[in-house]
Amino acid sequence: MNAMPSDLARAARELSEAVTQPIAGSTKIHVTGSRPDLRVPMREIAQAPTPTLFGGETNPSIVVYDTSGPYTDPDHAVDLARGLPAVRSGWITERGDVERLDGLSSSFGRARADDARLDPIRFAAPRMPLRAKAGFNVTQMHYARRGIVTPEMEYIAIRENQRLDALVDSALRAQHPGESFGASIPGRITAEFVRDEVARGRAIIPANINHPEVEPMIIGRNFLTKVNANIGNSAVSSGIAEEVEKLVWAIRWGGDTVMDLSTGKHIHETREWIIRNAPVPIGTVPIYQALEKVGGVAEDLTWEIFRDTLIEQAEQGVDYFTIHAGVLLRFVPLTAKRVTGIVSRGGSIMAKWCLAHHRENFLYTHFEDICEIMKAYDVSFSLGDGLRPGCIADANDAAQFGELDTLGELTKLAWKHDVQTMIEGPGHVPMHLIKENMDRQLAMCDEAPFYTLGPLTTDIAPGYDHITSAIGAAMIGWFGTAMLCYVTPKEHLGLPNRQDVRDGIIAYKIAAHAADLAKGHPGAQVRDNALSKARFEFRWDDQFNLGLDPDKAREYHDETMPKDAHKSAHFCSMCGPKFCSMKITQDVRDYAAGMEASAGMEEKALEFRAQGSEVYTKA
Ligand code: IRN
Ligand code: FE2
Image (cartoon, rainbow, N blue to C red; front, side, top):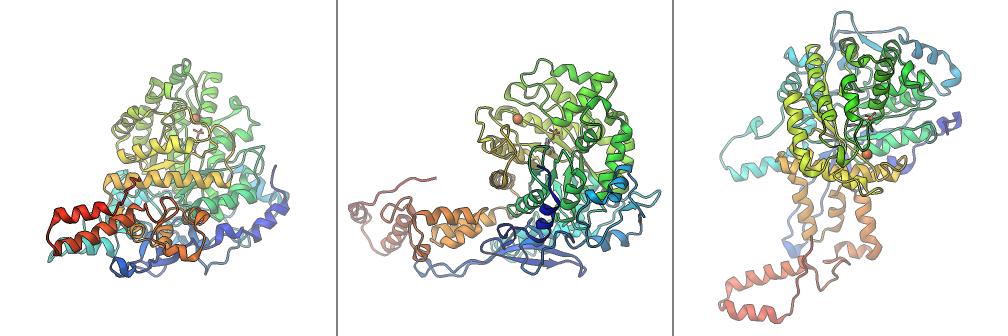
């Protein structure tokens, strides 16, 4: 079903309360940088004091990375028809290298803007797009390579550091008394470090000059591991109102970027609503819309139609484009004997075009023309893995690695134009073949960020592919993948609904955080330590609030112990009061403390055993 004007009207006024309430137990805070318009949002989780039985000390608030945008800020009034505040606009225009167009330059965009029937609700302030002035390059990579630290870079440094706050500092100071750390605390991220990583091509800041609403973030393996959530309708399902709400929902649970994979009618309008209301970078696969324009007939695609689509989307503010430029004509026959052939949508479109014309992929032959568009708006490349394996049997084959090598070659071309670039990766890969993917990507693509879809580590669990893939995602994230593209439980079965989106994101937040811990990301463990301490001290509310999904934790706990008094009970219904290992540990500690003071170890041990405590082993 396509969205009717009434859906839009409803979406403009209403987002359901479920997506706009502050996250349970959290307060939105802002940290101001070197200028007053640089305010970095974070989420602060307050903790209760330790019960007197365990020592009675106060516990510090924990500050965590916040992707949820102004929606969870009680001071922000949601008005979807007006869009989000344009936090970056001053930074973009003060650089003096952009000009405002007086119309949409793509033919499709022009037709759309003129057609009021297709645009039932206009934004309060119609916005004309920006473009680089002739001869200028407006990418963050270009600035970085000229030694410029942009406000976006400073914003990111503050944002990435939040878990390295006072807690880590004081822990370090306690470990190394008398030493002065200052800004050189190991692992502390500085704006200069951000600049250097972007200049080197090891990280990207997806931030189109036409997406001033974005809260800048970075994708690179020396930063926190990020998660992308895909949303988007297809011809048979989902309206615009639902898509905007899915976006807000996805970032609430921790989606760092969102890809709009809409196909079907109203594709331009859907995207406009999403971008104007998105505080996170938005990615698309432009070949999907180009294919719509030629009625779904891949052979009819042309470079001109594709180019027009790129410009249309760049002017709307899309932050990164998946471009399947590595699907070369000579690689297509290599997929013939695969069990599942080509599973990438974009990859299969380009393979069909190449075979039908017996010509080289026009995305490859026009790659530098594409770079010229990218650098006029600062759109980042996400070089598509059109030949990724679609099953365990096809993993790491010649087609996949041939494409990866080509993506390495294209990375260098993009960098020649100072265009920011990341590389997409698989797919379905068994655990023992995952490392080879990472090693090869780093070598061939000169350490450009890797962005993988899972990978799924087995094919036998339809309905649970958020789990089969989160296992692979955790591994490849540990090895160095910078962003993980989520997979929902509906993968291979149908379009995800809201609950599937939430389950997929949480599975991937787990994978990303597990990777950050394993990589030794400074500060990553602060939250684990705080949660574990809360758990051990039976501070139930703190345990819920410090978790990735406080609502679910609370709901599960309340199923069996719903009373308020239970929130301070020194056990839960899993083991009951007698068999709680944590309670017993505390008894052991108290006992040991008492024992130190008295003599007769053996005698005391006997006494302890006589109490008949049983210890359950739990995860
Ligand atoms: C990520 C890594 N490899 C693929 N992806 C994502 O898969 C890509 O960014 C896009 O969101 C989605 C579908 O891409 P295909 O099927 O057109 O390649
Ligand atoms: Fe698959």
